[in-house]
Length: 352
Image (cartoon, rainbow, N blue to C red; front, side, top):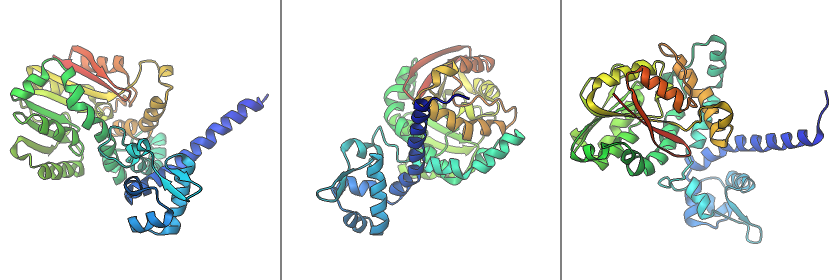
């Protein structure tokens, strides 16, 4: 076998970079959990001694953490002063949870993927999948925090206005179901924006529903909002004006059956909004940084979750618009269009 030395060197360089990034995912979680990024962004430039004192941590550990962060380009280092700091752009990603670019939840999600690897490897052998209720706990909070960034800055401002006539209904007063609501972040954002409407969040995972109820109580949203444990196929029929699936339809074992049921729960002129991970329809067109991330998440989370349920269609996180259109049509939602898109999501509108 002929080996191209230059090509081998380039590939090894890529692997070294990937290995370094993977190793530092745990350090992102440390910095996020201990508030190191937030303290450094607010009070820097700082030495390791100063950051340790301000954050209530041990200097020797902080010194090594800072060194790794600087080597990764996640923080800045000034040799003449021995101090570390964060650029505004770095702070937006790691220190500001309300930033549209916040990615501090990456550590939680990467931890969950590694913790659950034995279960996923076994699922490769058995084909039985791994249910959402079988996952490491940090996957739930990590997923909620990761998606919160996008939902906070785009759901009310861009996605809902892209749907035909939906904002007007919500302003006047509408009934809304948020299926697969998780910790209720999307449900709460909509409820706060449209006080004349009522919102019902449903999720099959009891722990997530408990978290959603707690969040709604803290927001003081009262009787305009409720959360209940239910699958997409057992959501009570309530004549909904809007039914939402946020980054979850592809995780369901029977998405066709889910949409068939949803069709029956909506009013005649109701709207089903499908927010799905962005994907092109051809495999080779998804060989991008975003596609790389979503295929990995799909392998470790989404596809096994679907396979653990009835039917187990296993759409995967990179189903693409054409495949999702087919699923919607089989579910009886024949009017289908791409309402808008972002680098990370397709926002699809489906009607009877």
